[in-house]
Image: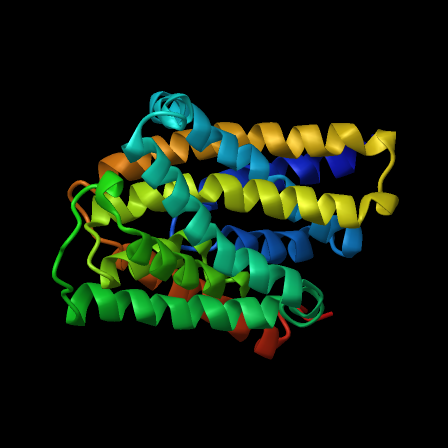
Length: 274
C-alpha cells in the first residue's frame, strides 16, 4: 500500500473517531478532510462510511456489559426485549430513507459547501434548544424509553443522512426535545449507532465491492483501528462532559467551522468545490 495513502487513512480514522459521537458531524468532517487531503471520489466515499464501523466498536466495548445483558436476556427478559425492539424501531426510518436516497445524497450533498451550510444550521438549532427551549424531562434512563420515543429519535436520526448534520447531534438533541434526559438521549444515541453504522458500512461496501481488491485491506484496517482508538477516548470524555455541561460550545464550533469553509471558498483561499 502506498505510504501517502496510508497516512491519509490514519488521519481520516482519527477524525472519524473523534467526531462520530460528538454533535459536530463525523461525515461532514470526513468530507472536508478528504477534500483537503485530495482523498475524494467513489472509492474514498465508501471508505469514509465503512470506517465508521471502527468507531462503533468503541461503543460495543465501552458498554459491553449492557450489550451482553441485552443479548443474553432476549429470550427471557422483557426489559431486554423492549430495549432491543426500541433500537430496531429507531433504526428503521434512516434505513428506509437511506436506501431510497443514498445515490442522490452522495451525488449532491457529499461536498464541502452543502456540508458547511448543514454545520451552520445545525449549530443554530443546538443553540435554540440549549438556550431558548427547555423541554420537560419525562425519561431519565435509556431503559425507560418507550417505542414512541424510539420512533421519534429514529425520525430525528434520518435528518443525519444530510452530511454535516451529525447523527449523534440529531439523535441526542432530538431525544431531548422529545422529553429524554441528556444522559438517556446520549446513551440511546450511542446504542443506536451500532446497528446504524454497521448496516451503512456493510451495505455501502457490498454495493461498491467492485471498486476494491485485496490490496485495500490494509487501508480499511488502518482507518478502522485508528477510528476505534480515538472514538473510545472520545466517548469516555463525552460521558464525563455531559454530566456537568451542555452542548453550546459544540454549536459555536459548528457555526464557526462552517463559516470558515464558506469564507475560504468565497475568498478563493481553498477551492473546496473544485
